[in-house]
Length: 155
Image (cartoon, rainbow, N blue to C red; front, side):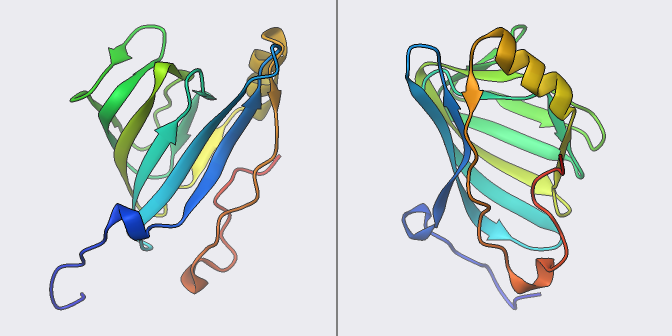
């Protein structure tokens, strides 16, 4: 316990790229993320998606709650705009998600350490079929308590 509330401003958060995709027309679409609070019990984050940014079908090691604040994101079945809540329970998967023409912003919380899991072979095939190239993103800075943990799934 911290003995009271923890107040954090998004203006003070460290932003990093979690996705960088290059489309056949040369356009780059990124997803930027800021961890608002990070602990062994939960991750609170904010994402900014460029128009057309895509995430793979994936899940997280922990229940995952997302609230769309701006723009829209779609998984081909659901179009989620401002005010939409997306809930994914531990072990389930969702996506691929694609940002709309104005991009998307969202606030999310993942319980537990929140590490993702996905089928990287299926993701690479999905991108190749669309002529999209995924560029690597440097790993985000991690707190000392996470030593030995990986935020990104292994190849």
